[in-house]
Length: 497
Image 1 (spheres, rainbow, N blue to C red):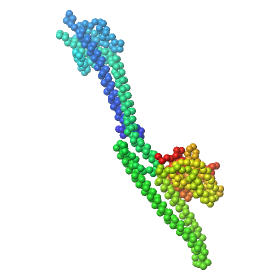
Image 2: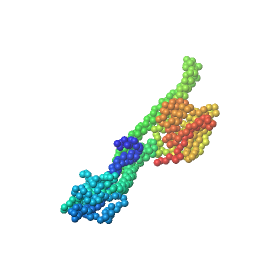
Image 3: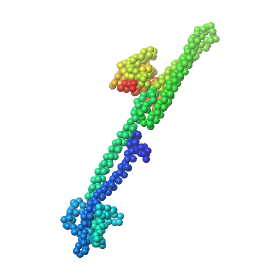
Image 4: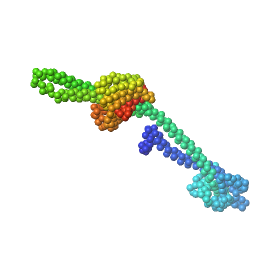
């Protein structure tokens, strides 16, 4: 039952515990209230029944034999008035002889006599039968006390309406119910406090895991924790160790593949350079070796060599971006590697690398740099800025191409921005590049294959930005021309903790 209640209720463990414990306590409280009602009713009846018994004993003491040897009750009118002087309930009195003839009092009580199942009430001097009866349109509590003398027997009957005893029972029930509800509320408050205290170590462990940056594999502390939580954290620590081993294996694989890919690419490039050099030497000697002239002078072969060289260059750039992306995604952001830095210095370093390329391509490269201090990983942010400029050069290239890199602070947040006035980024590339990991994978891969791998460059930008807690915003440039990409870093600088 508790499992079904937990499934229907809140998802938090504390809320589930409180719900289950409340569901368990509620029937107990209901049963306690029922038992309490019965107990209070019994106590009320017992107190008022003893009062009736006292009246019956006092009346029985006035029963005697008169001069005619008949039973009689010697009760003054003032005493009878005193016994029946009650503003709330009505009391009726009667005495019957052994032949059930009325000796004295209210003869209508004969029809209200208790049955054989009546409750037995033992007093100080006699045993009486008492029962609640409905008689003549009234609910009466009727008590019968048998009396016996040396030469006579009689029955004394005392009946009273139940308004006082019902009011007293309600007051007792209200008082006890109020106390029961107060105790129930105190129990729930105690349960809430106990569950909060018992689950606090689990919440601290969850908070420690949530605040742990990517790339940190240190085991969680388990000292002083409950045994069950130690088992859970021990399993998590084992998982962290396995993840660390996988991460280290991935890093080693990245280093190995980088070496394995770059070495044959460099060898192919060298062989192409040697082929061009050999072709030039052969062309210079065609006058003396006419049989080689058709091979060397073949313009198609020379063109193929040039295209192979360009394709090899593109492959080298693609391999470099693939490796940069793999390192960025696998490395995470280790707080120990963070350092205080300024995005303006990163932008200036990129300027020195891209000015010559901009002049060669006929692109007007400008910088609007202001100080933008933060804590980050310098090499990654330099890679991010370089990819932004490369993509701007690619998509902003036209007759009067302009590319501008900006840095500074806005609303206390450091930002880095690159804007071009070209035809704008193709929608497929933009959509694939800015989707979060795991979303629209087909579009992102398609974008990565278009435009000479621009999707990879933007994927590197996105990955590095996410690891620094930054947001990336893409929008059209000034006058709805070109593309402007801004990376905004958190307002609060990252710290080592």
